[in-house]
Structures are given as C-alpha cells and as structure tokens.
Image (cartoon, rainbow, N blue to C red; front, side, top):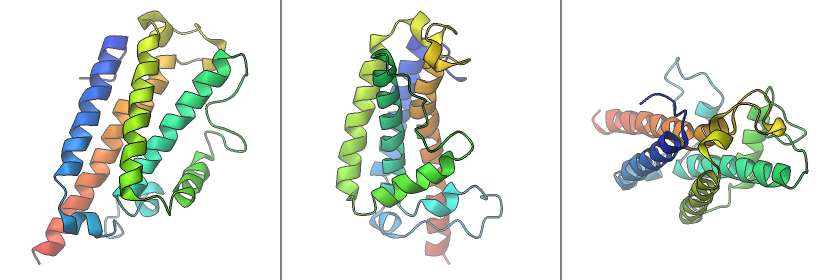
Length: 183
C-alpha cells in the first residue's frame, strides 16, 4: 500500500503498522533489548537519529512525543489558538534539536512506562483521526492552520510512516545483534 490518502487507508495503515511494530518488539530477545544500539559501522546510516537513539525506550519515546506534537497542535488550533506543528523555538530546519531534547527529557523513563505511554498516545491519535471526516483529513485548504498540506498527512506521518521508521531501526539493530552473536 502506498502512502494513505483516505481516512480509511490512514486508519488501516496506522493499525497495521502499529501491530507490526508490536509483533517485532515482542520478538526481541533479552540480549537485543539489553544491547545498546550501535550503527557506527554502517556508513549509510548518517542521519542524526542513528546516533541519538540507544535502545527501544528511546524509539518508543520518540514516537510518543511526536504523537503529543500532533495532539497538542490539533487541540490548540481547533480552539482558535494558532500554533505551528513544530513548537518554538524549533522549526522544520531545526527539529533534530527538538528530537534531542525529547531524548534527554526521557532518559529516566523506564521501558515499561514508554510502552504504556505509546500505547495510550497511539489510541488517542487514532480516536482523534476517527473524529474527522475524510474531507477534513485529506482535502487541502479545509483548515488554514495546516498550511499547504492536508491534516491527514500529519496523521500518516506520526503513525504509519513513523512506525515504519521505528521498525527499520529495530530490524537494523537486530541484524547487527545477530551478526555479533554469531561471530
């Protein structure tokens, strides 16, 4: 399936990728959970997040915080409180710094708490998406505060697409863990 462009496809993709992510997580071994992520040997993994996230908790918290961005952005703007998706002092050019702040904020959060927080925020995001019509989600210009995109594209980004990102990262970690286990 390509990137969702309807409410039905958004909800289906969000649910499917969330389930796939949870299946992948439940299959991680104790060793994989205990071993810190280290992608330094892979020259293709240059983006900052490959160095930032050190474990499953960091990934789950990242997903949770992006859910919070969406939930807060929609709630504020629906109340007439115009607010950008990326909160100040950050913007789309500096959101990497915001992600580092999320990472720092949660270094004392347990894996169990991160799992619970993500489960709750995923449900909240899905409920919010369900409250909008297909047109409200995927027609441009419905909400001025969304800008030139669609509201649905933000929901896709913080759910299905972000869950894909998390799974790629976990699979890469699993692959490295397997290689080091078999040396």
